[in-house]
Image 1 (spheres, helix red, strand yellow):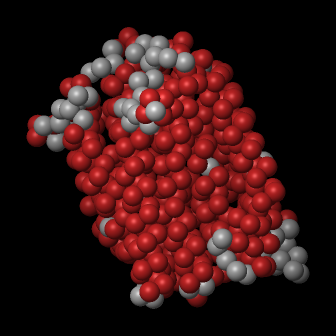
Image 2 (image 1 turned 45 degrees about the vertical axis):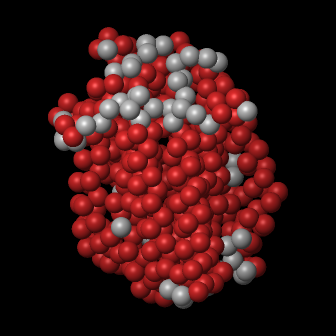
Image 3 (image 1 turned 90 degrees about the horizontal axis):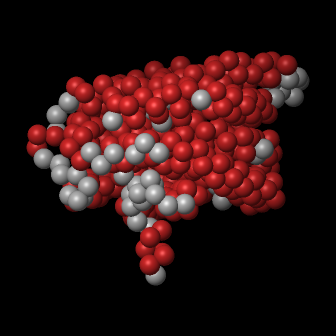
Length: 464
């Protein structure tokens, strides 16, 4: 029982066997990420089964625009996680409290900003990417409800990032599972019973996210043994804010560029028709689950590195990288085999249309090998971010997105035009994604070996 208790507890990652610490932190995080993915997946499954393929396409078609508009939260969350991990590792409670308070105030400001801006530009953005007419109204209603309630999503993700930075991946997991189950239940009530369609799933998601945010906030305020939040901490402290910007801005910019490219590619996807948009939605929902181990181990490596940098243990970081890569590559390989063998079963959860299942399976198998490459990318970029080098992963992301993904998607589409596919073969969308992942993996390996992150780590130790 004690071993199980240790697995699901806050982790001090500056001591003990590196791989055991990484696994103990990553497992609850993985379960939590899966629960997080249930939000969008439950929406897609329920509207696909109860409303139809067009509603499924509408929910999926909103994704790129949502991702573009939440870059502020991505930046705050990334910076907060790194700051908290380093202050926690250094046992600097007052700095930890001040950093958390600043992050919460900035999250409130960002939430209000996104509530106004996201609601206002939803319609013109949907027109800009040539959203199919048959799904346009559904997309618009989904987006407006989502952005009006965006504070719940923003606060949960930032507060969960803060908890994970302190090694507490279990609290965010518990609250997220509760919210995810509630989201599924409300989806069924609003869609299956009340017939609200995509509006129903948007309302359900909003309620669930608000609840998870409230639970995370309550936990944070109760952690008096780690930090003591007082009224004086809830202000925008210039020192912490600048550090947050330095650490979080590169990740936010990288997310913005990726989201912009996704919108450009979404325009290409829309040109292939509503059926392929639905196919893309299914593949991306499955992709969300497949990516969870990669993101979980990547985040674990960030926290592991951040805590050990704060404690001045760069030697433990290097051993942790070796252990982490073995874990993440092995996990990704198993997942790829499952995709190849059980693809049709996975796709069948989202739709009853056999042609759509077949198309989605084919596209999923195209990108499957790329998950191994992406696993390596997540692990190494997580180490660099945890050490304070957030700019290198940003520039790599810029390159693979702007110079590889988008041009290749349109080039492949152009070269594959035919009588059957006048706008090009839809495979172009996923072939370009595979290429960008593989090239990104190679560049990340080179960047890690060059060792700029070690220089950042040395600076952290000297300034401590």
